[in-house]
Image (cartoon, rainbow, N blue to C red; front, side):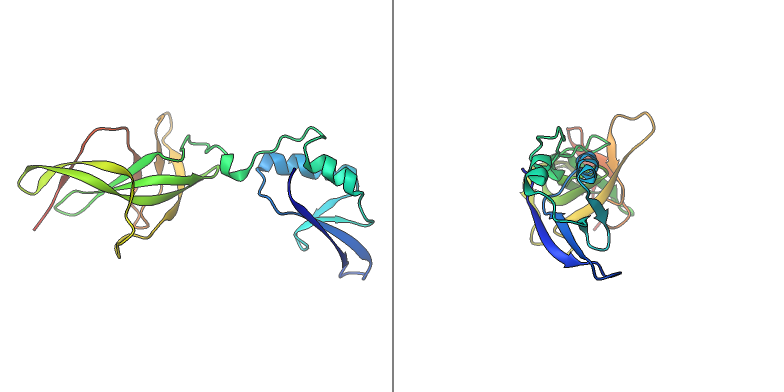
Length: 194
C-alpha cells in the first residue's frame, strides 16, 4: 500500500473546512492517473495549490486504503522501476569523444533513469598505449571518478535516439555539450597532445 497523510485544513477562498490527502510515495504517470480517477469517485479532486487531493468532507479511511492498496485494480509502478522510452537502463555505459588536435574519451555509467532522463556518473577507464601518445581504452565499470575537479559527481541528462537507430544516446552528457554515445563493447581509440 502507498504511504499517505490526511490533514484537516481551511479553504483559503471561503474559509470552509476541507481535508487534504497527500501521497508521499512517487508514482508513474499511469499509476497517478488511475489513482486520481479512483479518488475522484469518492469525492477527491487534485489541487496544485494544496499539492494533494482535497475533499469537502472527511473521506472514509477504508475507501482510501482500498484505493491505495490496489484493491480497486490500480496498477502501480514505483518511479525507480519506470522504463526509459529510449531503452536506457541502469548499468549502461556511454562515452563522449571530444578534443582539438587530440581525441579525449570519457566514460559514464547510468545510475538511475526516468522515462526521458538518465542520471550518469563518470567512471575510470583502462588504457593501453599502442603508439606514442595514442592507444585504446575501455570503461572500468563501477569504478566511479570521485576525486576530480574536472568532473561533477553526477549529471542528469536527456536521453534520445536517432530515427531508426536502435542505440540510444545522451544529449549534453558531460555538461559541456558533448553527445554521449552508447557503448557497445570493445576498445575505443584515443590520442594525446603534449
